[in-house]
Figure (cartoon, rainbow, N blue to C red):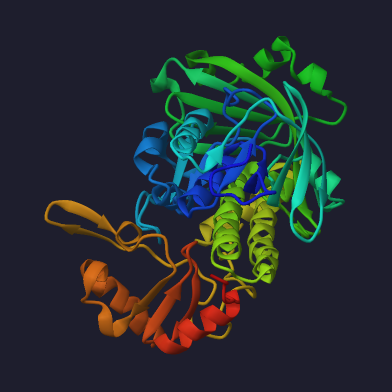
Length: 494
């Protein structure tokens, strides 16, 4: 199993347990930066049906970074308006869609078909000699020391041990890695059972053109577009109803009777899920780190579950590369949770807030809710304002400088009949963008947009990390010195 250019006794630089979208994206990002990984999964194939339904502009930018945007786009469609309605059909709340104008230049959000997107990422992995992707492997246990971590794995050929510099748990909500590492989840006090019904659309003309939350105390219901040619319903289970009852075909048929558009679909998946708000108390223990659902889980109402996991992968990948390839101090990895945890908790809070609006079962309380939300609508206000995503409060940033810890925008420009995007021109990063050099090299097409950004913040330069977040801004020489100090690059013996 020893990979090319990996010094013994390691089988790979990074062992990734779980080859879902987060694990696969992490492996692809590491390979892009010259870091070897072995990413395995307990199943032999990509799960054939969708689970996540939405990702945002930042995640499309990540796919762009991996050279996959064009492969992913055919399996998406722009996210439509998102409407909350009362039981009698009154509009209570609306999150409008914005097909363009995001900080990344891509559409604000996309509905997508997860299996097709996962296959595109795995196809990318198959092209890299730095990634091994054995399937039908089951994680059993781990041991670690100061030099590395060894995992005991059950394979079709029997038990084997794999040793890596780091092990990343991308193995889902139940996460055997999290359990083996002795890490636990904090309950953020939201736990509701829902029936999820996925379908293939046979009569598109019958289907809604917006995403819907029906705030009906008799049965809270979600109805959303998925990727092209697919649709989803979610029905909250009522007290006393069991998963076995909900999965009965007759029970499902009764739920769909009131939806005229249901005759234009073929059901191909039904499942009962518990919508949780959970976050790990610690995301790192020595050389073991958690990402995605193994580190946090949220209700689906904000459409940010998968997005949060993929942000984890982007944040962690460049730091692992810096430690493994560039001689950065291992302490750099301690910045992972302080940066990601506030983002995740913000989205969990938003999703729980939406869920509490939707999941009201008491008719009197629902009537009061509706009246309050209608009054807010009439006053031109949102009954549930979306909180701004916070900049990193701490971590690998230059605190106190303008925009430190914020996502850096990606300008797009047209030149010679071609669309140029900043990330494509600049490469992996980090980038030091100086005001006095905007007319030079790959920056030249974007000089106006970048100059405006710097002028707005009254700074001469910005240093952008490989995950496209701002390390800091200010004097260029001071930024370089501060970045080197923050990453703690040490001299590497020849």
